[in-house]
Image 1 (cartoon, rainbow, N blue to C red):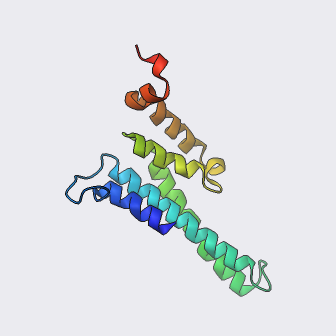
Image 2 (cartoon, one colour):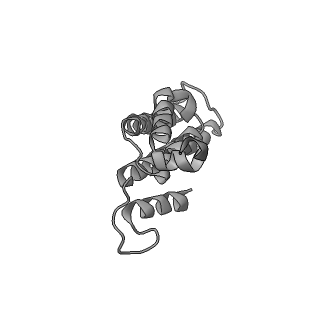
Length: 138
C-alpha cells in the first residue's frame, strides 16, 4: 500500500508525470488522504499483531500496550478525517481520493459527515458532474 500512497503524494507534489509540474490543486487533500490511509493501515497492523498473541485479552499487559498504540493511531486518523471533512475537493482526483476513505474498513460507519462532504464535492464540481451525468448539461 505504501507505494500507492507514495504515488498519491507524488501527484500532489507535481512529481506524478513531469518533475517540474506545479502542486496539484488538491495537494493538501491528497496528502491528508495518504496520511489517513497510512494511519489506518498502521492501526490495523498493530491490532492484528496484538490479537495473534498467545493471550489476546484486556488485562494482559502486552495486549493492553498494543491496544493503546492502535487506539492512538485510530485517534490520529480521526483527527485527519475531521480535517478532511472540512476540506473541499476541487478536482476529480480529490473527489476520488476522498472516496478511498469511504472504502476503508470502518470509514463509512464512523464518518457520516465525511460521506456527506464527499457527496457535496461530487455534486458541486460542474466538470465532474458533466462527465458523470451528461444529460444534466445543456
